[in-house]
Length: 133
Ligand code: C2G
Image: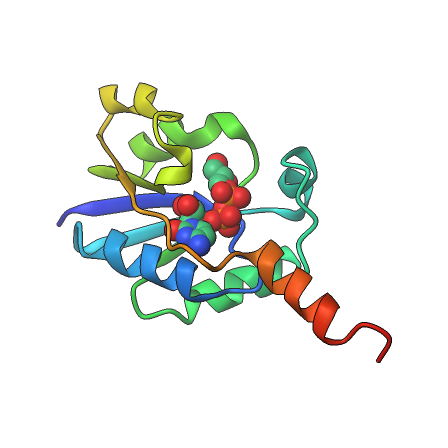
C-alpha cells in the first residue's frame, strides 16, 4: 500500500484543493492530509473563515482523503512521514523546492497549482459582489 501525505489549511474548500487532493491520491493508495490547526494558522498568518473542526470535517468528506491529522507546526513533517510510513510527500508547486529536504525520508512531489482560484480570491470576489449589501 503506497501512502501519500500532504499539508494545508484548506479553507473555503474549492476545486483547486479538490484537484490537488485527487492528483495526490492518484500517486498512491492511501492519502493522509495534515490540516493546519487554528493556532498554527496564526503562525502562518492565515485567518481562516472555517475553524479547524469544520475544515477537518470537510476534508474527511472527500472521497480521495483517507485520514486527516493535525498540522501544529512547520517541523512535524519528517516525524509524520516516519509515523505514518509515508512513501510520497506532495504539495502544490507554489511550494516548489521548499520541502526538498524531506527527500531523505520519502519521495517529494510538487503538483501544478490550479490557476484562477484561491481562498483569498473567493473572499475578494464576494466582498466586491456583496459590498454594501
Ligand atoms: N492549491 C492548489 N491550487 C490552488 C490553491 C491551493 O493546488 N488554486 C494547493 C496548495 O498548493 C497546497 C494545498 O492546495 O498544496 C492547500 O493549499 P492551502 O490550504 O493554501 O495550504 P497552505 O496555506 O499552502 O499551507 O506546511 C504546509 C502548509 O500547511 C501549506
